[in-house]
Length: 292
Image 1 (tube, rainbow, N blue to C red):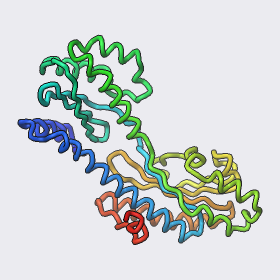
Image 2 (cartoon, helix red, strand yellow; image 1 turned 90 degrees about the horizontal axis):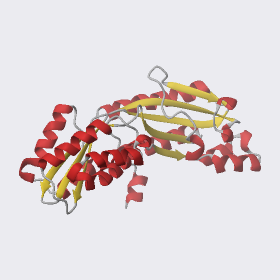
Image 3 (cartoon, rainbow, N blue to C red; image 1 turned 120 degrees about the horizontal axis):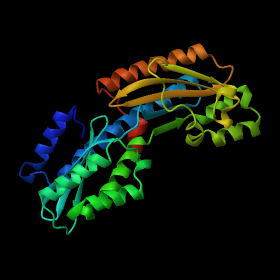
Image 4 (spheres, rainbow, N blue to C red; image 1 turned 90 degrees about the vertical axis):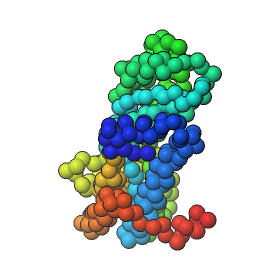
């Protein structure tokens, strides 16, 4: 789930532990609710990508990315019942993750407080690359009776941080380039279509600065070799919670940049409003059929 502030985080902990009324399944449902919301974002972006591709008759892509590094702000380990613990991670951006851990481990509240203190002193504000075997060994030595929890906690922490950093990516309309005169050469078109995927476009900027709502990359400016004979126009919009969306099109260098920019800006402005108000467009009939 998401909370708006450290005070909200404290409230979350209190509610989580009130007589342990929340079962493991119920705590997991908090994360499932977040996943449903993210899937709604994914569906909205995919639908917008299809619409932009149709209106411009060019390949379109959409992606989401975090605007800054994601780190752990706070750790807490809570005794749930005998040999059962709840690990709670508060991430930058006020995202909360939790994991239920069951181990035949005899520890008391004081042991868990000590381990929480060690984790908060050693692991907060670190990217996953800095969570090394040496760090694991140091934390384990300091964990006392709760040392058996350390490998599980570090594995889960790295998993969460990497998951938060992954980008959602959608590409549609690649074959629309075949209608452009530049790509009537079969070999040239085939080479471009083979490479026009997430791997190629991952070299493009993941985010744009606040004062750079639109960016145009023409020919040699493209950092992806396979796009050297094309141009990319992209624009940004804010999703909230430290997330940014990016939509763009790929086309020949002679395309009408003013018209493409205007259309992308229009969609980005609308998406920013929708995400800001949590008003996401419904899935198209085509998507609903796919779901069935």
